[in-house]
Every structure is written in structure tokens, then in C-alpha cells.
Length: 69
Image (cartoon, rainbow, N blue to C red; front, top):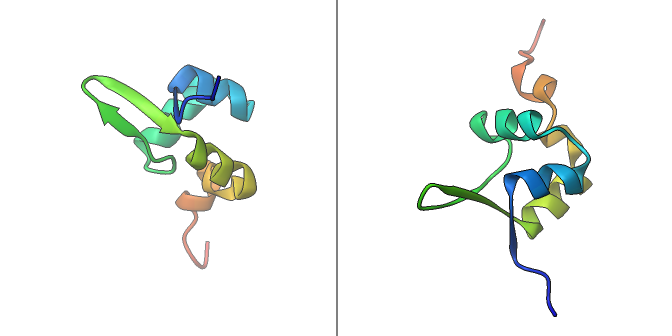
């Protein structure tokens, strides 16, 4: 059986080894792209793989720092 192309937010957080609230915060901040299907949020496995290769995208500090501070 093949793995699904998308996972829920809880499963995405588990796969990345982060907390569920950290995942929701990253989604709200636009650091994690999601598919919205009705009221459900789904994270593509390809997005999780990209985050694993580029963890700085997930980091809160990477977006909040401004040059010169």
C-alpha cells in the first residue's frame, strides 16, 4: 500500500519531530505551505521533505530578524 500524498497537521508535526502548536504557528506564519480542503489542513509529504532539507524555513527566528538588528 502506498503512503498518502498528504498528512494532517498532527501527523506532520510527529514526522518532523516538533510540537503540534509549533506546526500550527509555522502554518499561520506562512512558513509551512498547506492544502486547505474544506475545513481540514493537509501538509504534502513533499513539503515535509523540503522542510527536513531546509529546517531554517521552520524557524521562527529566520523570518523575524531584520537586517542590522
